[in-house]
Length: 148
Image 1 (cartoon, one colour):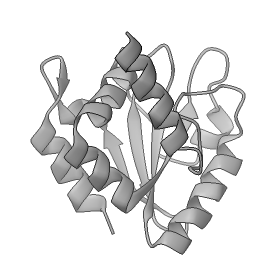
Image 2 (cartoon, rainbow, N blue to C red):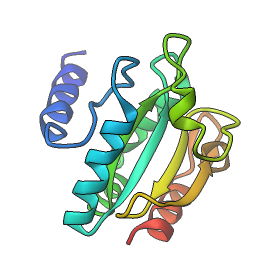
Image 3 (cartoon, rainbow, N blue to C red):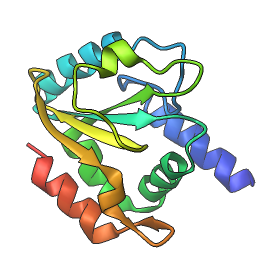
Image 4 (cartoon, rainbow, N blue to C red):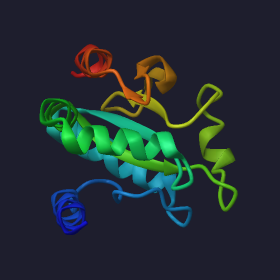
């Protein structure tokens, strides 16, 4: 348990300059977070990876653990993308904000935006699953395909 707390703390410290916190927060303004991420992506020659989900979502936590434990996937994601978490929960569905993009069938869901904020891709993450987790090769292929 101590190791998990230490890793979570280090992740929070590492993400301090990112567009959004490590958790899905219903109180955050997704439009402001994405605008900030787009500005960062533009200046860093990256794309924006919008992760839509909630703290209630078991697959969202599985994806977080996947990136925490897979160094290559995490580095590929962080090298090519600015990550933004957008909350979807009974407390705040962010319907107006999410209504600008294709309908989401399940959570988590990933949207890839260009450095200008234009939608490049909508990814149903169930296509990246394998058994009780995510398929490493599929996730790496997704990240490589949509990295700048």
